[in-house]
Length: 378
Ligand SMILES: Cc1ncc(COP(=O)(O)O)c(C=O)c1O
Image (cartoon, rainbow, N blue to C red):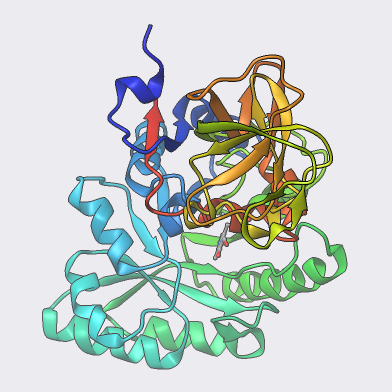
């Protein structure tokens, strides 16, 4: 049987595989954590964290009647162009306001993060004779976008005065729900107080939401009427010991394209930061930092070849990376290299790679560059 990269036209052997069965598994596990009344807004922004916006969204919307959260009008349009019918919310601040007409005509849900934005949405919606579904963004401590919580009640009242704005949601974002319980508690207190005050005044807003993946998994009381998981859908838990088993959906693979044996004391790659200490078999693989394999992994990272871990030696270069394969019994040009994912009984997690690079799994995923083809396995 032909291997995957033989079946699909990949000329340069570096690719990502997305396992949609695992995506389905993750969605159903997350769903089990929620009351049936809680709506999921799947965060598919940034090309679904590098996994493929359209394909991931198609699978998710086929499985459940959910909302999709994107970063930009570009992403929302991409989804509409493939006829995805789910409601789409742009999580970012709409800027510049000249984008508004297009977004409103396309009936995309908008985040209203300031009084100015509310005014501009109303102005343009009036001109277009349209109504706009909006979600008000409240800043409870992230200090990114949104109206500060002390002004949030008046802000909501102001939005309600615009006949063009249909306030469908109110939301906030946790700054450190994975690690900082105390800070999260403070944010929750501010947000839940607002929800309480609105209810008391008879203001009914269909969706209130604040839970990202870590809050969804760790703090069930924050689920409210909508949750916004991102990383957990992609199979990575932002907290240790999550209550459910998640399955990574992304594997990143490449191939050995060159082999050579060099004597001891041979420098390898730019600036000779690695010098062999024995007769060494070097495999050159077809991935580099232009694919998103970070230079921090020079002389540090490991990958899988023939079911074994092998070290990266020397500096990672733009398109190629050298591996010490001396200890492998057999190795050939064309052998598969697993950068992220499993091979035989071994696996390399995105968390492990992120730790080596002193960053987060989010950044490693988003850093896998556009030139790496994503292959979707259903
Ligand atoms: C506003 C908003 N909500 C939800 C999420 C999803 O967070 P996570 O991927 O940690 O679940 C993000 C991601 O950064 C976000 O910016």
